[in-house]
Length: 535
Picture 1 (spheres, rainbow, N blue to C red):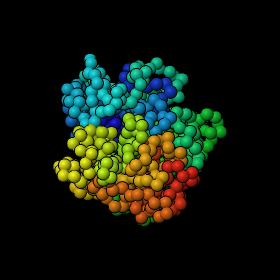
Picture 2 (cartoon, rainbow, N blue to C red; picture 1 turned 90 degrees about the horizontal axis):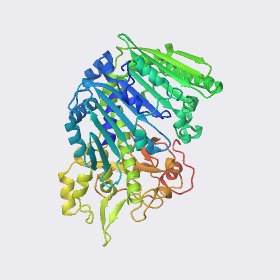
Picture 3 (cartoon, helix red, strand yellow; picture 1 turned 60 degrees about the vertical axis):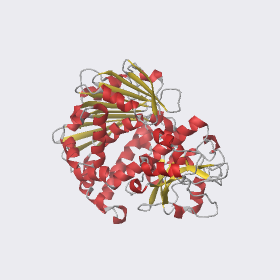
Picture 4 (tube, rainbow, N blue to C red; picture 1 turned 180 degrees about the horizontal axis):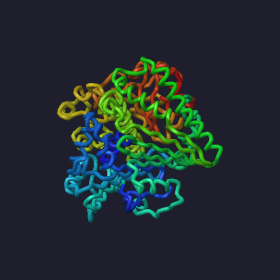
């Protein structure tokens, strides 16, 4: 639930991202000097601007649902929010993205009791303590708190997700810290401020070999030490500024070249057009905005001063955002984002399951008489906010026993198994599946641990989108066959398909991927060289 709460704010503000000058906001006081990621949004300023007006006009379902859920949690409307701050202290492994903090401040008192009620009734969670406004929550099977809510202030909520106690205290302000300039930008009153401390990112993220060939010319941007960005919204113009701080002058020159390459690439796209085969009808309505943004980027300024490289863009505040927002939060792009989020949630659930039980779930259970029981998807329920539904199944009975079928029929399929844009929600058939047995990451009999994935988690397929949908509780995932081409089993949309890898990341594969490369990423310990980008 904590992650949903974080994503509720993040998802809502991501499409619009784009404080008070007197005292340093409390959210900034909690940020470690070496934090990996930082985002601060003056929500009141953004929501009250022409940008916020266009967001409201878009009436995109995804945005409206998030606003409704926010109101359910707090008893307030979005225009009652003053600021939003998010930070991730470390980013050295995939789970670090879950170890984050969120601070939200309000213009008036929020409904603390409504908030407590939502926390205490969230499936899969249990409240450990509730003392003086500090509510500690854990996963159903965990012994230690995984989430801590600070509800001690009437106009502020702080959430710490999977964060050690040392990171839940006010941190000393270090003006020499990599992201120190964010403090000045927030106090200056910028509507949006963000910072990335790339030295805290995993080495593999910044490795050339792990970056798609077409994007390698942009690698110097993340080889910089930091990037700090801001957005200042005026009546007619919104000014974006990005400052890259490099380790040395050589890298600063490469950053400057990369920024020029971005501008050249976008100009080329505008001049030559986007091939019709690569865009859908919904995206076409967003093309006026895309063209305007590209033209703006072309007119932007790029400057370098010793080891700092900056880029400044000025965009009309009244840019035609409505069609774009409807596309992103209501059409194909929105579906793609939810598809990726589902896969990430399921992959995270797999890791949490492995942490709790010392192994990944079996593809399905097998009774003493050799009958197939329930799918891994049922075993995952406590780890994807479905603990109450999990309790209703008889796990020692076949998936289609009278009792288990009744549970299946009377309860909706968990949202994480619904493929966006499909009729999965009505049919209760899911496309999210795993390859089973014969060296794949999952097996119906052999317990597999994360340590058994010797090919590398970032090179091994965990969950994929199957062409054939199956009842979500059914033990009906495809058996892996090393002699057959697995490609026909995968559902491709516009020649691409999302997959979740063992490290929790979500990537796309093309329908032209070779049989050899696909086999290499399916096996967990085959010793092959995996090439996810192979066409």
